[in-house]
View 1 (cartoon, rainbow, N blue to C red):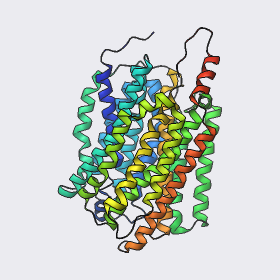
View 2: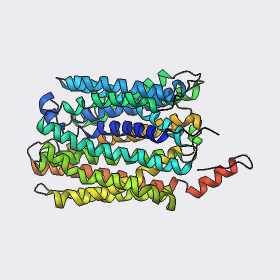
View 3: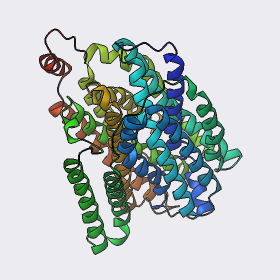
View 4: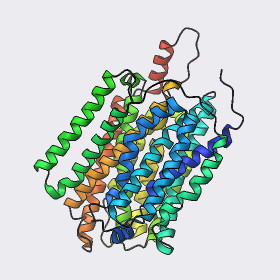
Length: 478
């Protein structure tokens, strides 16, 4: 029996701060996008690369981050991740051209890919001794995500409106240094022997990046163009190569046997579709507020606060309790379907709309769906993984969310541009383009809800299978 860490709740504060910052890194740029577009010369379709440069590298390297966390030690990888995140923030803040900005965002993605799985591994180690404490810790850790989103949209608006957009990156430097100073509260984890599958990491990251690149460029060069076809085929080859490597080497980045963990596959499918619906909604809602309704950066950030506050309240105070009563599957499926309903409502936005009528009620419904689904999906993906694969399971579920986010945003940007979202100044066409993206996201969320109902095992089924597989007399918690 492992010793209970007396400083575990203080350590949770550090880990939650890390989650807060990683999520804030995706939200803080949202309201700054139009200003960055003007200063750095991004086109309307290229603008998504400020977001996707981070998300692709983050998602592509999360498996490597999880593997390094298990081998080198979660605390060491956590510290290394923050050092890289700070370096990326310096580059992004100093950027004078679009390409340098993209490089800075990619470096931040590397840091995030080291931070996220190591933080989750440390959390599981600190609280695995008590399922009730683990549930409470996961709820607080999960709530740091919408809190980071809330702070991000607010601070992004404040900095962009009254200082400069560069401050959305500069803010990471002092906060990152403070987090590094507090890592002494975290448990020290010994390294263990093993090799690192660098080739697999390169294959999966390159495959994902090439797939997103192809989808982003397709509306301009044509879906049937030779370049698009070759890019998509190349992405498929790289991803197939990744799975071949995983099957053939002794210590793969992602041992395929991990997919035998109960509910890991269905939870990651749900997480992929959740990301593919939620992130495009957030992205296009920002653009609608600023480019159609004419909001400034601060006003746009303030307009998103009710949605993110609702997320934080539900994740901390309600979702965990509901999960104890009804189980994960109903919340995941129901949350995705509620998100779909909110997105359908958002699709009714008008060129002459208002925040109170066109944005607020629909965004709150969408946020309710997200708050119901996110934590149960995360816990379902990790709850049954053995401790030695905790970093891997965390890396996989974070990867699927970010891969879904990147591919969903790329695909729905293509849809939006084809329907007029590239026609700046033409408010009816802009609105039509954004509305089509909301409809596409709603379809993705609805498919996720239905598939969860069809393929995910119930809590009772998982508990029965775990009990049957356990040695006689051994107590099993799921």
